[in-house]
Length: 89
Image: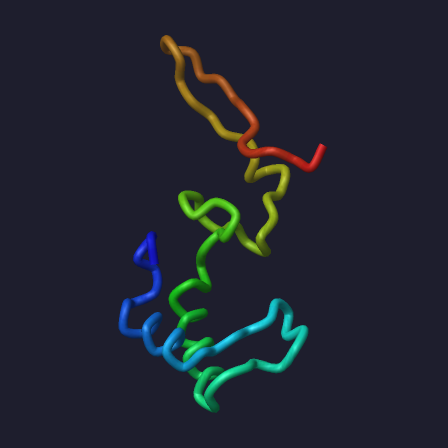
């Protein structure tokens, strides 16, 4: 709720219904019968978010290609290139 991604009424319905959703459907959804509908609605608000960095956009497929990592900027009238982001290395 701190980023105001999920409307307060939806969050309240979800928590009041004691819904529990497990990562990658490890277990069935726990709570009221309508928890799946609430979860689907919550995900509709969050589908285009980069969960690891909420201030950056989601890139196609979730991963940056080599071309997308190259940025350009002008410093003191000279165009320079740089690599965006980090790799696992």
